[in-house]
Length: 253
Ligand code: PGA
Image (tube, rainbow, N blue to C red; front, side, top):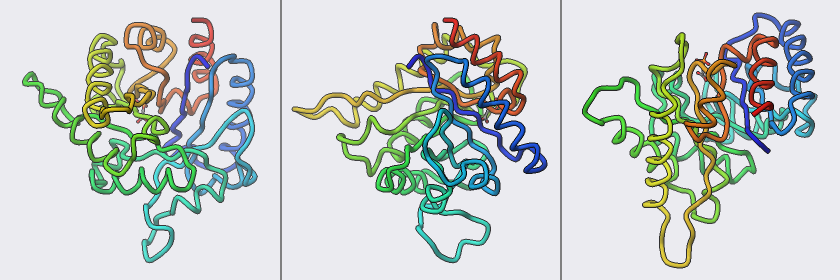
């Protein structure tokens, strides 16, 4: 597999009819993109009907967000068990937009562990909200990784996907510079090495992805120079033409 691409539809599209159309078009473009694993994260209210409750197929599904409790009094939330039952195989955890709404490092710690225990693939999103010149973003990402991987044994660490997606790169005209992504990719690996390297154990082979204003124009450089293994894509995933162009670019590399 050349890359993993997760389309985060966020709160789009407006109706289920449009969602079904978008999925059909996405399936078409994904079908011709060789070597790319495509995951779609639709609004949870559309999930079951889109997947038909099945977890197999060319496209896999992710929940955009889920609670760590299996059931209970959490108005408006869904559980990971429910997401899995509706056909999800992945779950986004700690997306920058959810962190702004109060999702804490402690929440992500519990969620990653629960996802793994249910056989869901946790997609742990990390990244600072602002970037200054003092290197504070490294401290932010280190704390997020330490928390997110806090309850993950070394034997399971490589099952977790890490997306570096700082808030300041989301919804913008351009992505961050691939050189800065590469620096962060190295930092993420180094931090995980510090967390896990003990005698007899190897450093976990965790896939690092990038998110934030990804499209067909910047994906190539990100994979190449940024050294990422894939992407979390917002806007370019809710238009099948842009998504198709993105997949085509990646497949051609
Ligand atoms: P964007 O969103 O691609 O529209 O910047 C990315 C995301 O938030 O996952």
